[in-house]
Every structure is written in C-alpha cells, then in structure tokens.
Image (tube, rainbow, N blue to C red; front, side, top):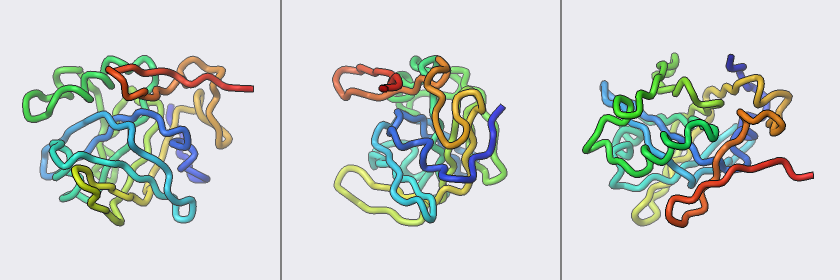
Length: 179
C-alpha cells in the first residue's frame, strides 16, 4: 500500500532513479523511460525531467501541463527497457507490456507496479536544443511503505532496489546502501 509523502517528497528522486514517465491528454496516454531527472527545489517541492522533442509524450506533457514520475524497481526492468526503446507511434506500450495503471484525481497515470510516484504540474520549461526541460511543482507523491518511510529509502528491502542507467548499450545497475 502506498503512503502519501507530504514532507520532503523530492527525496524520492534524490538518487535520480531511472523512471517511467506517464502523461495523459485528451484521452491519449503514453509512458516512456527517462534517466535525466532531478529535484530542483524543496520549497516549493519541484522536480525536472528532460524530454526529447521527438517523443510522443512531448506534446502530451506540453498540452496537459502535467507528468508523473513513476519509480520502478528491478522487477520492472523489462518494462523500463521496452518503454525506452519502443515508440508509442508504433505500439501501445501499456497493452504490449500489460502495464496496469490507475488515474489520479489530478488525471495523472499512475503505474500500479511502480514502488513510488511523484505527480507534477509544469510551472516552467526551458528549450535546450533537441530536448526541453519541464520543471514541475510536485502536487502529489506516494511510496510503498515497505520501501520508503520516515523520509528515507529502506535499501535492506530488496523491493527498494531502483535502477540507474549507465548510458552504455542498455546497461542498468541497482544501488545498494553504502556504509
């Protein structure tokens, strides 16, 4: 069960986990993989993603003014790889990967198997060449209690193993707690 994270929701993405970004506009939804994201403000809580202008989600985010950062764990690695390599112009990724989701009260697409999510409303954007930085105010954030509580990740729980992308031929790693 996911618990609402009201205090310091940016901590959910401090380690810049590979995430599945969902967007929804006028009945069209999409999901894609991103590793270029970060926290940009604690007060108010804000997060930024970098989106290629050629992505199917680019106009969905631009027109709806919203996106959701869904944080997968290692169990979703095949979904992460698929959603990062297949275009929504060719396939319905939700159907192809059997991605179960719910729709939030803010009309965001929440992936059921994600261990946490950060729902954002775009407050600013910056064109930086072939990508646009979307800066979003966090309007909602939830995390599975078993993997995130008291403002920190429980890395002793194997379900908390999030993914990081090494940028080299599809190599991903998980982060283990360092002492």
